[in-house]
Image (tube, rainbow, N blue to C red):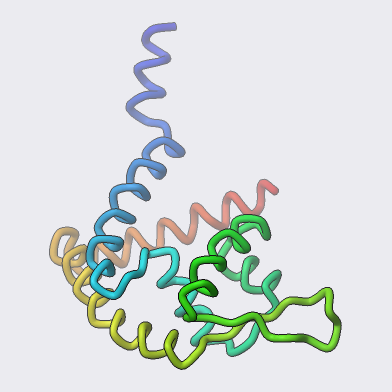
Length: 147
């Protein structure tokens, strides 16, 4: 059993991905800190910048989050005036959109994100970074098939 436990500790894909996610999140969080954003918040603002006023459920699906996590992540952005909840015709459907302040914050955050991307690309090499992203997309697809 000890040998099997050592193998799990060395080779577990899930544990390795969690460690890597925490590490890379920390790097992006540190780079985005001057504008008061965390990486997760930046991703939400980017998604809203691309999609206008999506229903919260659709936004959660696009970002791979459950509705509870999405609601929790939206709270600070609403509180800080970066996004607003817009009324939909069907009151059961909540839509969100960027505010002017949210757009300005996103514009200020983009060069900081570029710096984080450049740091990762420098460490992995451009080709290595692209291969990593492709592999992560494949892992996401594998997990989606398992659902």
